Image (cartoon, rainbow, N blue to C red):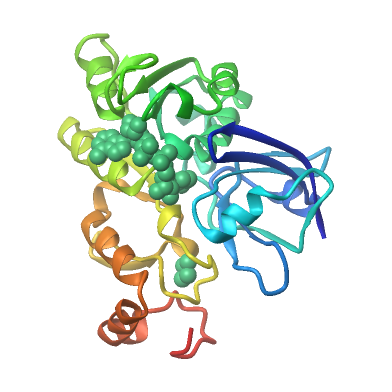
Length: 296
Ligand code: NAD
Ligand code: FES
C-alpha cells in the first residue's frame, strides 16, 4: 500500500498528492510516469511524475478530476493509500539524458499548458539543479487555473504567465506568448519542450517548425493503461508506428502526426471504434507486450 502524505487542491478540480513510494522515488527521472490503482478492481491511471524526494521516499503526482476514477481519487485524503503505485515507467526526458555542458550552451524554453505544467516542473527543477538556466511559459484559460507558478519561479530563470482571457499575465495562448517573446522581447531559443493538451502541442509544433526550433512533446494524454497492452497510445512519428507508453512519452514534436493521434483518441473511446482500430491495425494495434489477445 502506498500512503498519501500530502494533498493540496492547486486549482478547481486539480489536485497534488505526495505519496510514499520509496522505490519509485529512488529511481524516477523527469519525463517518466507511474500507474496508480486505488483498489484491486480499480482502473489503472497513468500519471507523469511531477516531483520526487529521494530522501523522504515520496513521489508527487498532479491530476485533474475529470473521469469517474480521477473523481474517486480526488476523494482520497492524507492517510489513505493507493493499492498500486507502479513505476517509474517510460523513458526519461531526452534533455535530462543530454550532456549538461551541451545543455548549458543552449537557450531552452519549456511551454507548459494547463495541467501539463505538472510534468514540466521536474524537468525545469532538474535543469536548475544541474546549473542550466531555462525559461518557461505557463499558459492557462484563466488566472484561477494557473498552477505551480511559485514553484516554477524558484527553478526557472524567467517564467512568463499567459491566460487565454487576459485575467492574469500576458493576454493570449502559449503560442501568442511565444511569438511576443521572439518578435517583441528579443528572445531566441534553440530548443523547446512543450507539454499540455494535444491540440496545444500540435499548434506549438506548427509554429516552432516555421521558426526552425526543435521541439519535444509529451504524448502522455493519449495513454490509457500505460502498459503497452491496450493499444490506445499508438501514434505515428516520422512515418513509424510508436507507442507513447513504451517508446515515449516524449517524441520529436515535428515528426508526430497529431491529427491522426487526436482522431484515434476519439475512436478509442467507443467499443465500436476500438473494434475498428483492432481490425485495421492488426498485429500493430498493441504496443508489443507480446502476451495480449484481441480481448481487452
Ligand atoms: P487547457 O485546454 O486549459 O489549455 C491550456 C493552455 O494550452 C491554454 O491556456 C493555451 O495557452 C494552450 N492551448 C490550448 N489549446 C491551444 C491551441 N489550439 N493553440 C495554442 N495554445 C493552446 O488545458 P487543461 O484543461 O489544463 O489541460 C488538460 C489537458 O492537458 C488534458 O488533455 C490532459 O491530458 C493534458 N495533459 C497533458 C500532459 C502531457 O504530458 N502532455 C500532462 C498532463 C495533462
Ligand atoms: Fe495502452 Fe500504451 S497506454 S498501449
